[in-house]
Length: 157
Image 1 (cartoon, rainbow, N blue to C red):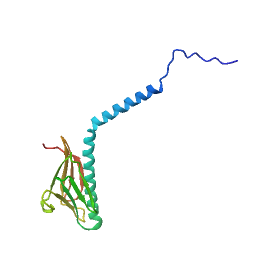
Image 2: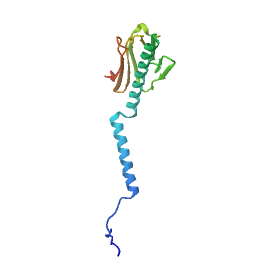
Image 3: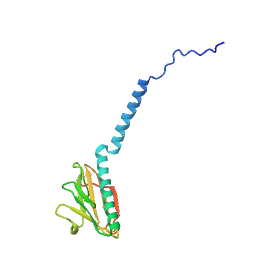
């Protein structure tokens, strides 16, 4: 004797096409929400550039301590370029505003700024400020300790 199966009339499942459509809609809405909350590509570019400069300043400090010789990080706000020891150099996106605040005594040439790190970890100190519209990041270097800090900036128009 065979077991009887219950009738499945009237019940309908979800098709693969419908499931894929729902997943695609959720993904699109998530991307839009992430872009709106994180400042979008412009905010990501600003934050990424600030992190890169902070990392290169930390490298310069570490290099000064390791070699026992003063090392210089140079930034040219007008050209949107920077240079660090060991031939490291890079560009800052043109869409970002760049300002440098630091000691004039170590300024390589007019329009450029520099932060010198000493073998004991100290530095001449300074600040690199990157901005875009109303958003900004400060990369601060303490003169006494050479510590590099990254924090959001209050951008002046």
